[in-house]
Image 1 (cartoon, helix red, strand yellow):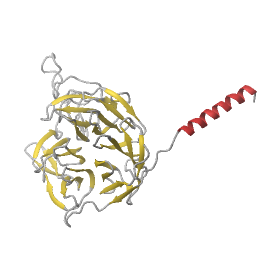
Image 2 (tube, helix red, strand yellow):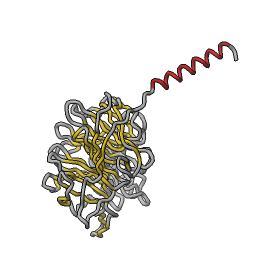
Image 3 (tube, one colour):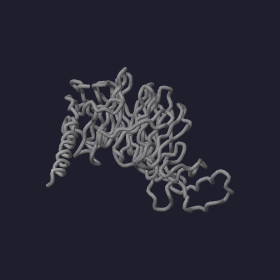
Image 4 (cartoon, one colour):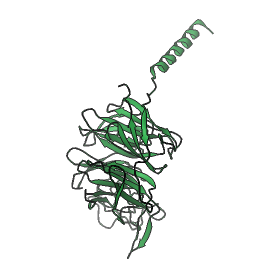
Length: 388
């Protein structure tokens, strides 16, 4: 080896070693746990916990998959319902009541949120619906609808002559024609006459393809993650009455593109944080959908929650495998993307996580975590904040 080549190798070793030294490990945050958070009567059982949340009174709400939906045959449609249930518990975990029995939109629970006015919102990936319950348990708003069992021809684009595109043609509507899986989305703009967007941008309005989360800004505008269906990768924005305002996003890996937009959180300034599942990153937008930043140091994000108070933190649930039983943790992150620490690991024991699909973080150091694989709610209490 020549003197020059030795010098090059030495420089490379020093550079590589320097990069290793610069990579500081994420500190572990010590915490305690309670797995006896909710208690149901003997004849009621919870299943996969899709969503958990608390209201201003400390009451706990759980949206859970309790079995397969059952079918009711109508005049010209088959209605599926009853695959999921919504339960309410008091602050001590005692069962209070069930809400929304036999609601049309309870098929396959995927999320739950409680808004600042104590309304409870359920997100259902089977019904393609987001349902708002008021504080008395009455249905107050429904966004989305179940997929039709037959194809519906999309409306013609503006200016096109009537009668184009025969029934069952390549633009056949929601469901994609014979053999398409239930809930498959039609091409963007189909069925509403709206302008077509880029591939994977979804249908404008409240036509969802397996929505996964809901969030609100300070004025009550509603944001919905519509991004794990066959073609939709978008965030849709509505006013507080449920009227469609705009949407953004499409399928891809660039800025403002998603590979499964799974969860949402909104900070006090109205910035929207989106968990981009397949791209393993968090993207940040303003309230109108303009891209601001991204960070990708939190694994594969499944659930998000932003704390309240003067200094806000983002909690991110990571799952490195589909069941969350081999690689899992929760990250505590500053809003600029700097990781403060992490806690929890994959498994079935206390302090372990099995696909943590929902986080409630009204208190910065006390979290409720809903687990899909372990069929439970854990209360995690952080004992000491990691160095900031």
